[in-house]
Length: 331
Image (cartoon, rainbow, N blue to C red; front, top):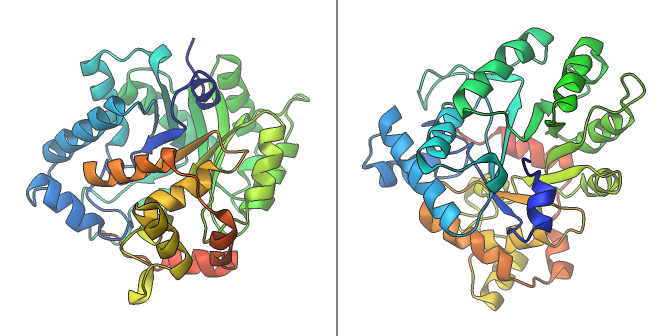
């Protein structure tokens, strides 16, 4: 039986997973991403170079005990890289959890400076096209399959044909759900919790942004957890804004975060991820590391007992957080 992230955690695996958003393509909006990949690949960002680097990252994560891996159709060749690694290393479905997402198409043509990197479309046609693409790339069905950045605006939660197709996949053992983004994450998630098709909610999982700068989805995520959903946290380091690189605009790492990192003798990103791990509703927290060093720093989060009282002062209004995120450059 394929493990869900919740099952993997209950069986003793670390609650930290590895997301491949920054690994499957040459350009991403994490701070310093381009320099990180250039350093790791000798300035070459060809498909072969990034495949080799991604496999090295996956090997490092596996050796550290990470057993949850997250990809998406829009993460360049992330599914292909992950699927190739799974086959080459002989990792069977029962030994780890693989998640992926549909609804965005990668259109950057392997360019970091592309004017558009992803195109969003939550139609049935996209789902029907991308599901077999995911199966082929991964060499297996993902254990977790999510609508990528579902919002109320796209209407996907009201599309009966999409919901019926997702219900079919759920009946075949795939844990179907949604990822959320934007200042209305909580509203979108609560709408998904109420969604019914044939009298049954097709969703059993959510992947949401939660971090010290935008913890606004926390109450809704607790509700999803109470309903038996698998809850996965993404962007726990806020695309590098809660790392040693600090916030956008040249500002330093927030003083409470820097102080807690100094007290514990770790990097700020480890503290940020530890704060997410402390949330009782979080089943898995994803690392978005681009380098082995970043991954090792992120893994320190599993050892930390952070003081959440001081860190709670970092929260921004969701609208501010997402405006700043949208201003990040793809490199």
